[in-house]
Image (cartoon, rainbow, N blue to C red; front, side, top):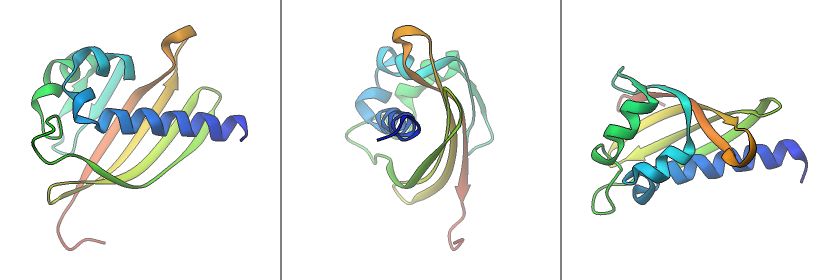
Length: 128
């Protein structure tokens, strides 16, 4: 594998970890995967920061093994620049379909890949 493929694969692995309810329920685990400058615009239109995401993540949908969990599909990525990967994909959470775009940034030293930005857009029923 080449370096670009390795970087995209590492960002995808991080994205999949953030969908794992056990990771979502743990502020400590989630903190390792979110960049300190993290920002998200959620499907509801709400803006999330690193602090608000870590505070609320254990309580939002997809954070319990006893409830619907994220089912990702069509995940792909591209290396935008050294240390910067853009991912796009869709998820199902119960009957809610959402399109996602996220940017992963490689941290210094042992920090590894962390989600820097995320945008989610809900897809209304009947839309291709």
